Image (cartoon, rainbow, N blue to C red; front, top):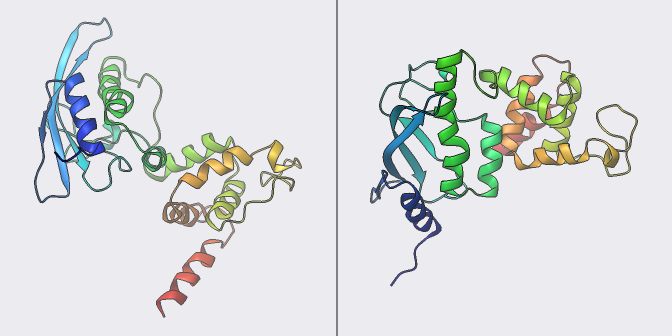
Length: 234
């Protein structure tokens, strides 16, 4: 008997924990999916509503791929403010955080508990109180800015841009050299761990962020990458 893949094992475990979900293999397609009910309680702990959701899983890339979550009850209004698009796909977190998780590899049940269920409980909390329980990321590139500010604990756009370039170009200073934040401390005593954490982002994402940050600061680091790309295509 053929041994089950990690995807199949994780789906089996997930369906044991959440028996309302049904698994669809979708033969000859890139994604398989699960459909089931997600029950949410109100602030008093009383049953509030049942969302029907669809979980899409990339067969080839799992566990190094983030599941796509679609709310198919159509209870949540499709707006950026609610972090849900017109087709009902949910924005569970800022893409940078999700990408980091995917590169480490996810576990479906843990991901559901930590990302999917809180998305819907947070929606109910906001509906009841007007605010999200633990705050929220800003939309679009403002959310990216917020991510880097919080991740690096740096407010200055130019310093953030310098750091993104150093990571993308593999030119992070050696441990005993000065930190890129301008503190005059050795980088090992300052931002080395935080800067190294950005290595888990893809180079394409770093370059995209670099280009967008350069709209606010007077640097041309992104030219280094775009010119090299042009040379390779000649």
